[in-house]
Amino acid sequence: MNKFLVTLNLLALLLFWGSAASALVDGEAFPWLSVVGLAFPFTVAGVAVAALCTLLLRWRLLWLPLVGTLLAGGTLREYCPVNLTSPRPKGSLKVVSYNVKMWGQFLRDADGTYPVARHLVSLRPDVAALQEAQYCTEEHKHDMIAYFKRHGYHTGTVMIEGNLLTCVSKYPILRTDTICRSMSNGAIAFHLLLAPRDTLVFINAHLYSTHLSPDDLQAYQNMVTKPSADIKARTQWRTLRKFVAAARERAIQAKAVAHYVDSLEGKNIIVAGDFNDTPVSYPHHVLCQRLTDAYRATGNGIGRSYNRDALYVRIDNIFCSTHWKPYCCHVDDTSALSDHYPLVAWFKRQ
Picture 1: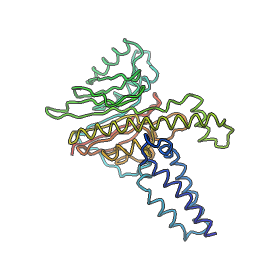
Picture 2: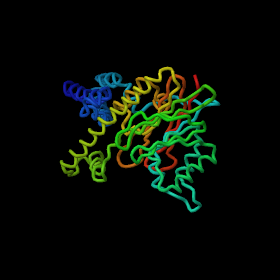
Picture 3: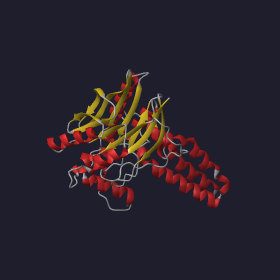
Picture 4: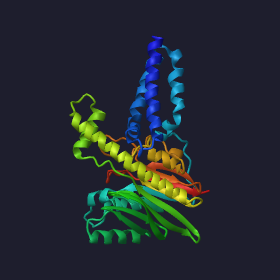
């Protein structure tokens, strides 16, 4: 029995460690290895099952899964952090990252207002990074810019092949830099004037999407929720190849953002956006090497930011340079107008 339990625990831990280590793998060079991180929650469940069996049958061996889990505890905290709550200080900067999905596919109320824009304004951010914020008509564009202006916001936009990356800011927008672009995804730096001689480089990143079709999404959902279902191997293979191709593109874009951050050494930086990848991923790891992940530092739980299909995971992020101390980062799940929930955080100058 001892030998069986040791083998069971070691097998579960090896899968757990391998999945955690995949975040260190350059997705551009080894895209097939980089997608192993998608299995991280399942490997955690495997370790938990092995630990439960050990507890029931040979509790004296329980040290093995416990110690093994601690060896990759940092990655577990990336995925599902636990932090003590602390009140945000006065005068802190409120930042929102929100993929608005074409303003909830252009939802409009009878009074002519747009619910997604109204919800964003109700959050009262000082600065917000919006992805997929394209307008349906010129009238829509005019109405939205006027709406934000009435509430004291400046609006800056950059179009990347049909995908509009937008910055909504209480502070003047001095200029923009295009960091990278690939198909309809990329990253834009908005330079904001916080005060005389005090500029914030606010990077809005929307990394490469997997571009799954409805059939692909259904196949993925079946693989996650109904592993015993009869799913065509061809559909599974096509879906997996899309994940791999997207992982490679995201790695290239993440490295471009990282190089841009490196070029701004000593500057005041916040990066926000839709990374289209889990916290156990190469893009997340690359940014964490340079900046502080606000959710990991101050958030609690998984923090599901994508509210559709079987993707119960946080794919939206906000990072900051050492100029800032993050507070109270959380997912605002009070409205599901878009397929993403807004990610909200406060920052106080160090």
